[in-house]
Structures are given as structure tokens and as C-alpha cells.
Length: 312
Image 1 (cartoon, rainbow, N blue to C red):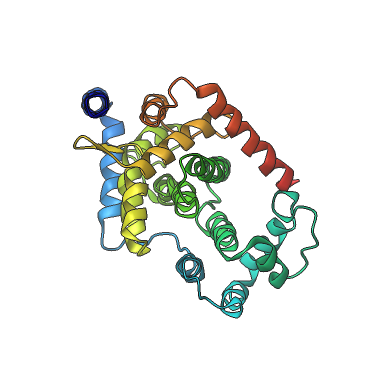
Image 2 (spheres, one colour; image 1 turned 90 degrees about the vertical axis):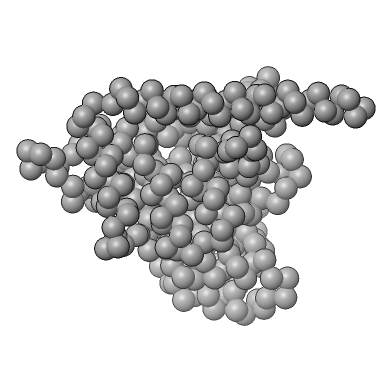
């Protein structure tokens, strides 16, 4: 048995190192082939997020506090309700979501108290975070359609990631948040892009922005997660959901988010920039699901159907 485990570990390490090496080569190859104008935009985005003057989109403090309190088994019901009611516009969205068949199971949900009792504190914290993020982070007047697509992709990714975590016997609340926020770097790019100008003084179209955004979005996400003071583990996952294989080791949470994002892209909730196929399949192989992609996509389709039902 020990020999078998050792051989399996060696094989796994070889796959990880191979994927990691391939990713590095791919990054260098892409950088060397980029048009000069594209590289200029990448540099400008990186300077924007590194600037001391950069202000990230705001995630309500109540959302961050709820995520913390939800992990406290002794937190009072009243404290949770008071926090929800401190953000009335978002609380209204939470109530609407809680009333949907996806969450209510046919029960009457008419007040915030009802919603907390029906969904439970952990789930209500996740629903509140989703509503707050959609309202205040994934919102742009200039790039409205791409931001709506990004919001859909992130929501579907979060729900799929939670289901995948349950498959391997892990709690789904933290991975849900990681999935929801994994592309905040792209949202940040869309929010700052209207202020950027090319050499000709003109702004940039979405098509011009797509590849540069993909190139910098993990770095941007790391900056925002730090400025929001998210827990270090969540920050690392959000900033490495594509580069989940580092120094021969795999972060399971980051790999799950990468895989969930790829599944979402296959079920009518696609990413708006870049290509995750290679990384998504590498993540599937890490969990032993490389030959089970049809079941993974079926899971994704089920999530989309459930969410569509709740939205309807």
C-alpha cells in the first residue's frame, strides 16, 4: 500500500509540475507575442491598481461582518437581523432572493426574521454578500452588458464551487465567497477603464480591453481583497484561482474555484475574457474528475436551472 501511495504521489507531482511549467511557458509566450498597444494598456492598468490614489469599489462593511459572525456558533439572532436591516436596499434584495423557490421551498418568507429563520445564519450571510456584490461591485454604466455577464458568471461559479466542495466533504461557505469574488479584478478593470485614454486621446472599447483585463485581473483582485481586509486565505484564493499550482503544490480551494469557473463557462455563464479550458481540466484531473466532465457539466446545468427558477 505504501508503495502504491508513493507512486501515486510521484505521478501527481509530475502532473502538477508539468502543468505549472506549461503555464509559465504559456505566460511567457503570450507576453512575447502581445501587440505593443495591448502591453501599454496592461502596464497602465497595473499602474492604476498600484497607485496610492486607487480607490476600490466598496463592499459594505455589513457583508464582511456578517461573514465573520456566521462562523460564530454563539452569535445572536438579533445581531444578524440588525446587520441586515442596516443596509435596507440590500436587505430588500435578500428578502426577494429568500422568497424564491430555490431557497424558500414553498414556505412563506415575508420579513427579514423569516428569511434568517428559513435560510439559517450561514446561508443568509452568503445571500447578503451576493446581493451586496451585485449591487455595488458588479455595476457599471459604461460597460453595462459585460458587467452583467460578469455578475452572472460569478454567481453561477459561486454556486457550482459550493456544490463541488460538498462533493469532497468540505464546507461550502468560504468557497462560495471565493467563487463569488474570484473575478473582482475584471470588475475593477471595467470600472477604471472609462478614465483611461490611448495615445490618440480616445477611450477603449470592450474588445480592446478583454485580453489586458485577463492579464492583470488576479493582481487587481489581490489589491482589492487586501484593501477590503478579507481573510488571508480568501485573498490568496481570489488572487491565484488560475495559478493554483505553485511550487509543486496545489491549493484545493483555488483549484475548485478554477474548475467551477470553467464549468460555468460551459453552461451559458461564460467568462468575458481569456480562456480557462487548460486550467479547468488540470483542476478536474487533480480531483480525479478528468474523465467525468459530462457529470460536472450536468451539475453546472442543474445549478443554472435552479438559479433561473429563483430569478423567475
